[in-house]
Length: 326
Ligand code: 8YV
Image 1: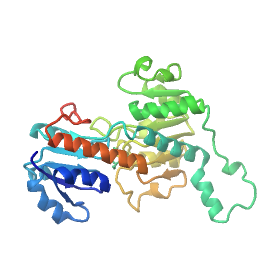
Image 2: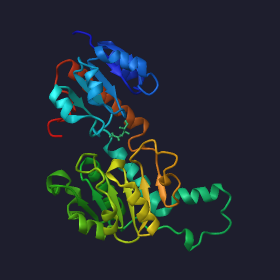
Image 3: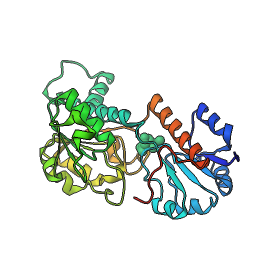
Image 4: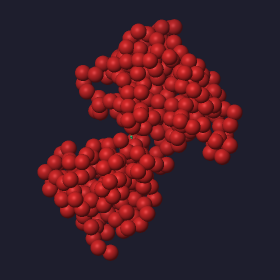
């Protein structure tokens, strides 16, 4: 088989780099640290593999031989889908292998937000644990509370299983279409209910946004959205930051209608130092760690490598994204 040119633009584990090197010529260049090497490699690159780097038409113009981009992510918002489709460039991603880990992260934030874990741990660290905690530091229960989930794909359903089966939480979900639970998630039958957005927001004690970023979802979580939430509810976002109007989120927190927010994603990442969300006392911020465990990041890298090798060999990749569907 002809050896092609692969450009790796984010760290890949050694075993996956070795798989690529066995079949192709490999250049490793992160555009953040080695922009010159990255740019110099583009004109001869057939396959790109990496994550967290926005790809635009100018980059594609500089890479006229490009056949495939293999993203080490499930989200594809960094890629110009219509451009890729028009140019016949295959886009691959990593669905499935991160589902349970991201659902765990949702629960990390959900528990931390309800029980004020970070705030109370800091109190102990700061030497401020001087008497048994009083009402001013009490949290709120998780078990039995109503969880509203926006976006009910694989990850939303994995969260719903934890919530409904583990914590006895009634689950409401909102998605374009009701999911056929009988065939897709029988264990959630009678436990998760498809609801109109208004009803979900009015009834949920905790609202989870698990939305991909697209033209339809950008800025969708706005002042009107927060105003429709149950007073005193909490908001968790482990989807994409830009689905939220962050000024509206801050206003809802400061007016007191929103009790707390747990955020793994932000409109701009890394979160700018001057963002009020960074230090807000009722925000638990995480540095986009949804899938960031040793096991899962390795599984994502392995699937992305398999996808790339398959596409460069002219085979159907295990997980190609349908760029025509947008
Ligand atoms: C990754 C993610 O953090 O898969 C995604 O879409 O947001 C995360 O799992 C990120 O893309 C870096 O690999």
